[in-house]
Length: 153
Image (cartoon, rainbow, N blue to C red; front, side, top):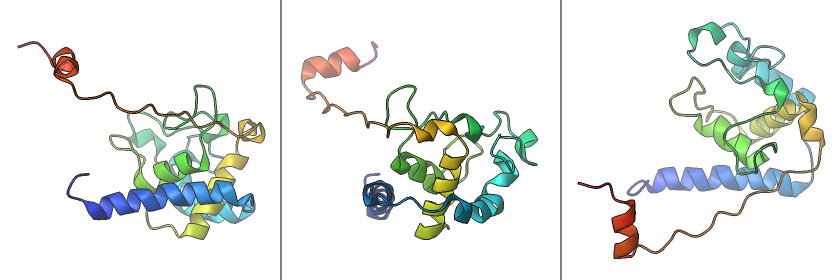
């Protein structure tokens, strides 16, 4: 994202929004997100979130079955549900090389409501809150590290 301060600012805002939702301790009413889901998500994910929407057959890889509560793109350990920030990132930015297109037109209230609705689709979200994995700092860029990581000529 070098040279793209606008994109970096958007990413920071999205992550901040997701963290703010979690930190507020307030859960939006999942029923308020039902209309947002129907208008923006159900065409692919289906009315019940099972990944069987009207457009699902157009994709090489079917849309995610949200009722299973299993997500690939998350900052949590394997087997844990994603955080609200993870869901926010996937919804707002989309997922490149998949049918999950950016839904960056949603308002903050709509985003919070649809996340609450998505979380209501799977009992896996009823468990303890997920723990975000710590990302270790990048190793120093020493000549030895660069040599080891560079492909052989």
